[in-house]
Length: 374
Image (cartoon, rainbow, N blue to C red; front, side, top):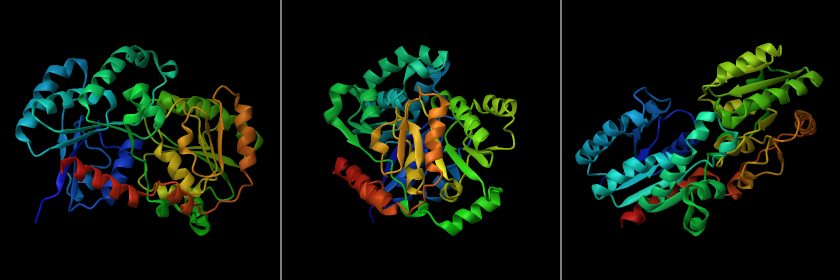
């Protein structure tokens, strides 16, 4: 019996981020008699998905972080790795331009297929001072990645154009951030049960899913909720995620007297259930590639109020309301109020029609890998 082809996925750490969640959706759905996923990660600590990866037969290889002071060590580790693992014929990098170092070494070892996958489209003007300083080296590495990659994967047009350049638009291969649509289908009884478990019965629940980092614009999100809650005190804000700015946001919530009305839920493994308890999804990011959480929210039948910086390729249902992040919180509040009387519906058929259900996409990815080596 033929062994499955092993694909080496490159990540920083397998926590519950958007790209990581998307890859896990595919991993669960692929035919593992044909394709098996392994992971090269760049943190020593275990990630949230590590147990599940290993349970499905995946291997996890730990490297040092890609910091300037580690580059020589990292390059030596890469050489040793590829010397010891000639079985990998396909690399699939989810690390944007930082996959450069692994791809460069892979070429020396004759790895024929090197897929670079664009998951985000940074807007440096909205970033921290440190991230702004990284702009030039990031763009230089991105140009090098174009030369080292055999295939340009992307989740959206805007993400692909940033990493691979507008002149390479025709070369972009769109891999959808697909989900198991049926798992998120809205159910009224489930919604009421989950709300009761969280103490949100008879509350209007505004939900948000995202890492606490500058990109996600939590500071403005809290301003919006502050305005909304003043008019609708029966409302609560549920924040899913973790990150370096969580402490800062918690302090702001406390300062505004919203401590009892803003719930910090951390990283969750029960998102299909948790979305059932939301009444609306609020997502004022400065930029995105194509966020998995926004696909999940629409699959859960939620009206979505989001920034107009996000690609319109995420629009899968009619209750989708982009607003400029330059608008004052009051404008966002007005739209949230319009969503208050909207009924939840089962949008499973819409998600499948839009091509974002995982089953067909997993089959497409399997065939892509197989055809590259045939």
